[in-house]
Amino acid sequence: MNWEMFLPQLWASTLETFYMVGFSTLLTLLLGLPLGLLLVLTGRGNLMPQPIVNSVLGWIVNIGRSLPFIILLVAITPLTRLIAGTTIGATAAIVPLTLAAVPFFARVAETALQEVDRGLVEATQSMGCSTWQIVSKVYIPESLPALVRGITITIISLIGFSAMAGAVGSGGLGDLAIRYGYQRFETDIMVVTVVLLIVLVQLVQFIGNFTARRLSHR
View 1 (cartoon, rainbow, N blue to C red):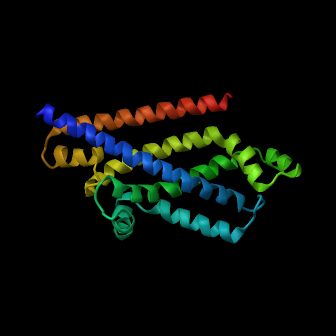
View 2: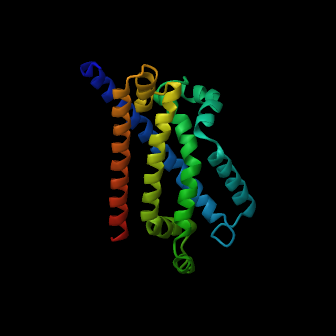
View 3: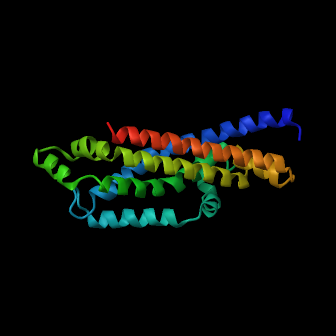
């Protein structure tokens, strides 16, 4: 293997992975956290009880979570082309990555928010605080360590999904491993990309655990 030619490709693929995972994580937070809040707030006995709305949202989230990523990747090809203008490359991969991660993180956020002390919520409500004030002053701050852990799990899942998306030419480390390591039988490249993915996952897990511990001790 010509390492002088391979290293620039490895660096470019790593940046593509950061790009895909980074933007997908941002969009997942922007969409998944409000969805998780709605699942909590519209539940029975909560601040905005709407059983029908809650059931519909839960049904939609469960469908999104039940689809294997590789099937979702192919099934939403028309939507990906409509949004990104193409079905290949790192930008196109952000669409299925986000759609796969949003329902997952919504459930994680729902679980984290439900762990907030109900008595604290009721006490704040009795003081005349609005729903938004309770969400911003109680739900989010009190569940922040658990939310950080959920974000960590989501990012790690997105790293794995981004590698899987390499099977359809999305770019990134997964695409590099498939094109060179698998299709050209260059085992060295396969080993290097796998090791790099493991390092990325370990780094994300370390940062997530450290941040969650700091927030829980504040």
